[in-house]
Image (cartoon, rainbow, N blue to C red):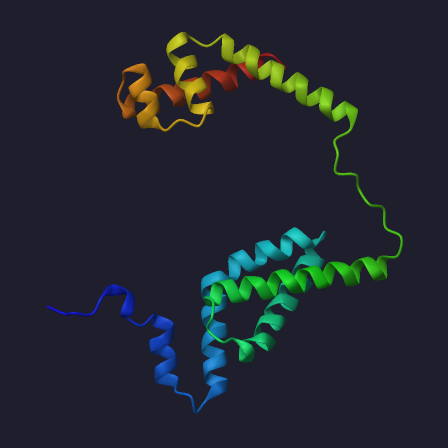
Amino acid sequence: MSTRSQSTRPSALAVREAAVGPADPGALQASRYAQILRDHAPGLRRVASRYAHSEAEREDLAQDLALAIWCALPKFRGEASLRTFAFRIAHNRAITYLRKRRATDGEREVLDPTPSPQHILEDRSDRQRLMDAIETLPLNLRQVLILSLEGMSYTSVGRVVGITEKNVSVRLTRARKALRARLRGMQ
């Protein structure tokens, strides 16, 4: 029986870095960079998509993020995970990108994040249609749907209604299907 605990085992990255050795910092940087891209590329692309408007801008920003991460890797001290390090670099670089874009765009129209009165009325109307449609559901379906909308787990809903989790799942599926049909009919 080993006395080593799980937490003292080296990570896959640490094993790889030990194999590369301190004599070759370029190989270590390349290894870390490859791991970041392999493990976190989709998340980094999502970061780029949140800060850029067009597809071309997203591609440019994604490349800029990748380059910024590569350039910052020699400064990685291991105080945080590679994921945290990469996303912090990406976030900071994306903010810098926004600042530069605003400076070069000049007077670009700033969109008001508050909804327009028309949008508020449409939301209220949609919400009322949804509530009306829920009220037309049979009680056994309405019950599980309302409890589910309150954030209750299938187990909790089952306990409240007195049915199994599987039955909760079946009733929710039926309720959603009936609700979609009723909402289509109300348009």
